[in-house]
Image (tube, rainbow, N blue to C red; front, side, top):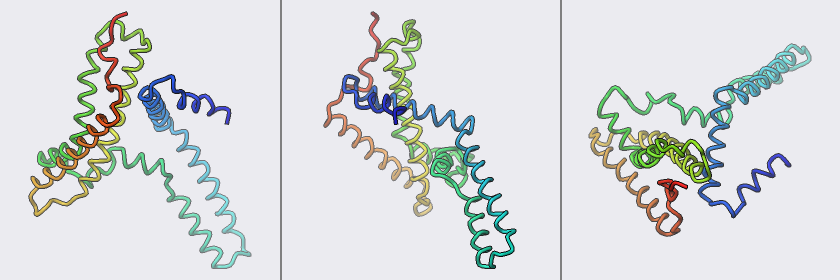
Length: 223
């Protein structure tokens, strides 16, 4: 528990801006997921456990004292263990580019527009963050990564990561809607309508809570 104490203290530290804390936690979590996905720490750990359990079941199946029903139960358990996917594996599969052919045909221009309209709001959010943030990286002081520039970097990374998650999630949800009356333009309208509602909710949240602007530190003032 002592390992998590600094993390918990950072999260509840009111002396730091909420946006800074949220962006830091989100970026750190995404980096951990990326490293785990690249090096497969949890994958190989789970694989070792699966192999160990399957070997134990195989040894149990060789026991002649087992009844036929016992063996059926053991075989069923073996199949469950082999086919089991963790929540993390399912999330990776959902958020990755796998199985996109089940949702959309990217060789069809009309389907590409269908994808764009399905995730218009997060795409707009990601592009906006890049348009505002990228010019700062041409400023000399950005490489010093002082407090202001760290905040800027974390905000850009946080917006891009959140935008990617929303893009994939929205696209895969909205693309499940079949072509309405075989008129794809109706799906465009439905997708844009859903994204417009999200935009309205986002603007309402910003206005209602009156938080500091997401890009308050942009542009960074020279010291």
